[in-house]
Structures are given as C-alpha cells and as structure tokens.
Length: 318
Image 1 (cartoon, helix red, strand yellow):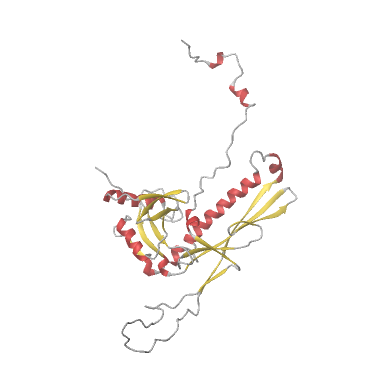
Image 2 (image 1 turned 180 degrees about the vertical axis):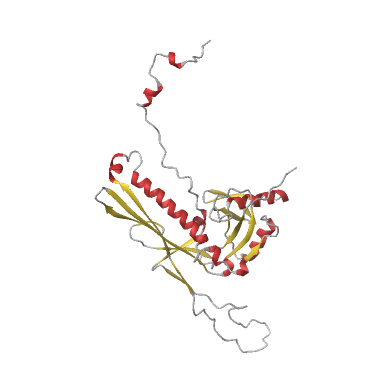
C-alpha cells in the first residue's frame, strides 16, 4: 500500500514556489461586478434621429377621431364632415449627452497589452458604464425618464403593499393594447413570485433573447436594478418600496421608444461615439466617449406603473 507523505519539505525536488516562476498564468479580462444585462435597452425599440430632436405630434383626443356614417337604414343622406384636430404645441424631445474621458498611459499600453489590449479593456469597461447610466436615465431622468412622464390616469396603487396577481392584472387593464413587457427590480419580481406561490399559481418561465424570464399572462417580467427600492439599487433592509412598469414598445404601435443619434462620427455602436483626443507631452493618450439618448411615450396608454410595491413580505409555507 502506498503511504501518503505528510511533510512535503522532505521531498528532494523542485518546489512549487520556484516552479511558479516558470509557469504561464491563465488570466481573465477585468471583471466589473456592477455591470448588469441591461435588458431594458434590449427590449425597448429604438429610433435613430437625424438632428437630435424628436417631435411627437398628437391628435387632440376625443371619443372618436371623426364622426362617420355607418348604418344599413340611413337616418339621413348627409355624410358627416369635419377634420381631425392636431395639437398646436406638440412636445419635442432632445437627446441627452452622457460623456466620459478615458486616459491610457501609452508606455503601459505598449508593454502590458498581451494577452489583453489595455486600451480596448479600458474602453470596453467605460462603454459598459455609459450603457448602465443610459438605462438609469431612461427610467429616472427628470426630463424624459419613464417614471416622471407616466400619465396620472396610468398610475395605480397596490391593494395590500406586496405585488399580487390582481395588481399585475390591473396593470394589464391599463396597457391592454399589445403590452410588450413588465419592468421591475429583481426584489419586486421575487416578491411577486412569493405572492404567486402563496396562491398556487406559479408563473411560467420563457427564454427570450438569450435570457430566462418569468411571465404573467404571457407577458415577460424583465429585471432591472434601475427601478430603485427606497432610492437604492441594492437596499440593505429586508423591506422597501419600489415601482413596477408595464410597457408597450414600438413606434408603429404608438408605444414607448428609445431615441438615439444616428450616423455619429466615430460611431462605435448605437448612439455612441469614441473619439481619440490625442497624446499629451507625458505620453498619455485620451479618448472621449459620448452617448446620446432619450425616450418618448407616444400615447398615454403605452405605459402604466404600479406604485408603492412592498418587496419585504414573506410567508411560512406549511
């Protein structure tokens, strides 16, 4: 029987510490834990703009846009006449700029760019940070953010604090014309799942765009930590309140759309430009990153919000 050697110091052979100096180390790219999948910008339909301005021309609302004659037995031979009135001062959305500057020491870039290019890694993380801010602004911006621009008629309160199936059905009644997706903080989604479990109606899970989402009435519930809980992405308290949105997206559906500047100089990706600013006398290269974005709600019934959603309700299941 072989005997296990307890004391490795007695081995007459090259030690691990010395051998380490000759070994190749397998490395990862920089890991940035604050990054999220940013599902909102993937589910939302975007429209490119020519000059950074988007005007939403609306028809003045009424029961019907125009009186028409529709009868087998005509009460009158006179066909109704008129016209459809437009708003005289339609709202205009102007793109918002989100920018940052990245500096890279060219000496570091020259010497330490294998196996990973230092410039590309720096730019990649900076771009992801800008995209994180974009998603937050689409929801929370004081001007064009979705939360601020929801019509009062499209705001409802939870019945008992926790988000119940009844509350979600009420949201659907507000956005009943081809709703696309719910949007909620992960803790709000977990709270809704607990309410479903309590009632014995577990939500169905679907795979969309490479991600797994629970659904309610066939509508996916998309997670984002930008719908804050008590003003925080990651609240420490067990309890807290947040909002849940239901959105119809698409210009053709008179829904909610994201806006970006098309055809940017030095365009890297949708609405984002990366410009080389030059190298200073200390050998530091500089890059300007600019992201242009906004959002527009084309019709009031394109979005609704469930407010004061309590995320800290738990149950004991016997």
